[in-house]
Image (cartoon, rainbow over all chains, first blue to last red; front, top):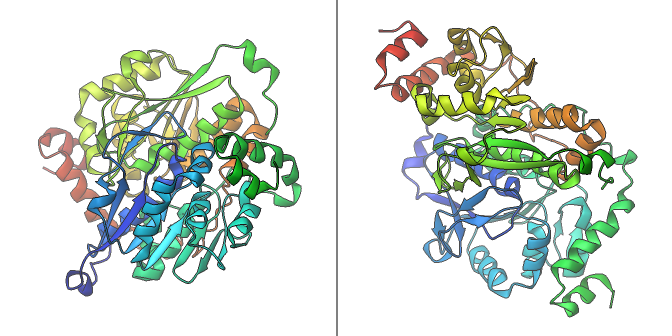
Amino acid sequence: MSETPATAAEEPTRTIAFVAYPGITVLDLVGPLQVCSALSYLAPGFRTVVVGERIEPMATDTPLSVVPSHTFEEVPDPYAVLVPGGLVPTLAALADQRLLGRLRQLAEGAELVGSVCTGSLLLAAAGLLEGRRATTHWWYRDLLTRFGATPVAERWVADGRFITAAGVSAGIDMALQLVAQVAGEPLAREVQLIIEYDPQPPFGAIDWAGTDIASYAPIAQGALRQALVDHPELYARLTDEK
Amino acid sequence: MSETPATAAEEPTRTIAFVAYPGITVLDLVGPLQVCSALSYLAPGFRTVVVGERIEPMATDTPLSVVPSHTFEEVPDPYAVLVPGGLVPTLAALADQRLLGRLRQLAEGAELVGSVCTGSLLLAAAGLLEGRRATTHWWYRDLLTRFGATPVAERWVADGRFITAAGVSAGIDMALQLVAQVAGEPLAREVQLIIEYDPQPPFGAIDWAGTDIASYAPIAQGALRQALVDHPELYARLTDEK
């Protein structure tokens, strides 16, 4: 490992806060958390925390439950904020004013605000992505327009202090980019080496041209309908459906 | 999403058990867990569980704690077992006869036994990789020889019913391969699409030729020494050091 940069000890610790809420897609959280925690190991000027309403187990979209390290109150002013996504629980959270308020508070003073997958829809619903370029899971990319954001089909999209990643595993790529931005490319490469991120998908990259994207729309729409069953006005606004 | 294969409903559910123990590298667990849980969503003939000594929060190598879904006793006979790795806590577990016994029990009737990162060292210490080709995190690849396994520098290595992955993020690639093996390549590709695994590391693949691998040996050795400070005989056997 490289030596800690001399500046790290002299500067205040920069806190990278990962937001946890019930039902998240757990890899959305853990991919970038592992990347940024490796950074904090190499460069003590950074630390990672996982913030939630309570320090209690919460369900994910797998059988694993996760426990935040801090409450929202304990981390009032992080340097960076990262919001994971998910399927039905995240879409339901588009109507969760309490969580959206938390996100606005966390984002207010943060120098960097990021998301993975449908986490960007929460940032958008919180009013944070208006007029900005952003991305999300490919199922829901067009939904960003409903919140005044401009959808972009890229692995991650940086616009000002906002950086949004595509679906699930894209959080790893985005987090490495974020590490390079805040700590320099040599440290980002060292993190990549430590987590041995040298991807070799057994069947190669995704064949987007050969994917019938439209065929997934009914499933994506169905999940949104299920999530917002108690919020018909929001559902109508997001879909033009009655 | 594709339709559930007709056979799924007719066959008994196949349980893929992920082992959790304190101090794991959380992405080692969550990468393949997300992949296999997506499979269980697409093909109800599969289910994932996370097994541990107790259904209680346990620390990881990040600020996130995780909670298993089942105890070891509750999952006596899984179809597949996957063991995550970690740094000092995993190396310390090389001397944890209780955990090694659990791994032997789980592996006994399993059709597939896998590992991520230094999880393969635990399988090896449990006597399960003798005479087999295997891999692990690049820091510790040579250590496999001490347990009678043959180290291989590949992203993942299949030998009989054992499949071992390289460091941390390699578990995602390995799990997609495993899904293809048990459920067919079309389903594995569909999982890849859902988790949008279309990796674009911002600085490209790891430049192994430009990496001074030997320079990391003292750090790797130091972590092993720290982990086995109470087990000098095992440390000596693994390192030839007194």
